[in-house]
Length: 408
Image 1 (cartoon, one colour):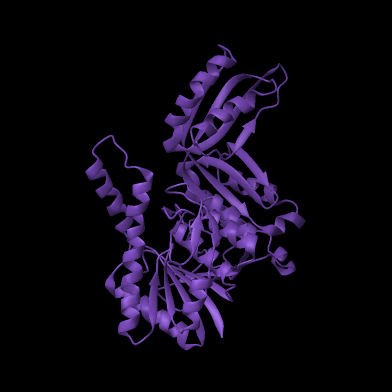
Image 2: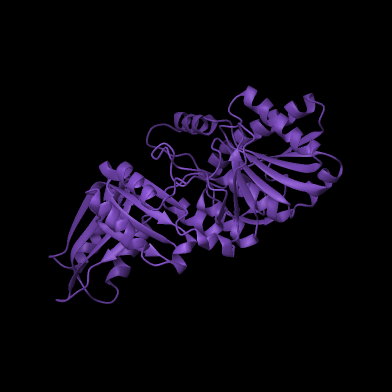
């Protein structure tokens, strides 16, 4: 008998009818001879509604305490687990719902974005051995002293991956509202095709570059503990995308996919003294403001003065400027700061780049022939990222997808 962990997102359980549909899928999995742990998210829209309620009772300009926010947000998933277990029991199955705390998921004490520190699955295993289907609340756990915590964005995916590792599941299935991981966003490139299998590293790079199917943290956890998982749709029975350790055959595909990320901004600090510790001061101030920085480019200094550019989300520009002003005054009167929004990032990803040359040249040539100007370039072993005007991102994605023959 195999043990399968399944995860159903908020869209998949967004209405009573969809919860009943999910319950039928769970029973199908059980009837195929499997033990099942189903991790569910809050129903679509519920979490946002809870956040709105918190704002209404605390008043404008005030933030609720993070401890109480976790207590509130955890109720979204608890509603779903109870309803899903009820649906299963009404169909004649034997199901029991568990909160994250009841399932033995222990986290650190960072409220609203906690990290899993340990899972004690003995109670879950005992319930499985008694013939139960486990319906587990995603996105939550408890601290060592019993405080409720939530795991932040992508928390239900992380719950499923972590529980699959803890119980040594034979397979983890991430059910969502898409069929799997595609070579590009099908809304931008209609010819994009589903990828049958992809390595952890490729999906990590695609996730960090704008592909929204999985959060990076969940993929990192899966890689660390060797959890194979499949991304597939809860709305049909089509095969999905299998995510696993890379194999030799995977390297024959040079480019696995194209990712795009809109709403980016470039911050340039000009006239910076090229001295040890300068970059540390700049990015230390940005980090202290909890701003995520992606691409960083520094010009080569010939006169002892250099320029440093980096990208952030456009919503973080004002915060970055405020954090950098005190630092700039320390660096000298000639130092200036300029922010430019209206840019986007385009990335090509593939482990085959390790053993194939000319990928960058081919990409840059295709964009040039389409009249698309590149502003910044960043590379890793299996990814090339460029920034371009956001108004050209759709065309750039189509051109790049075509030049690497990703449509099939």
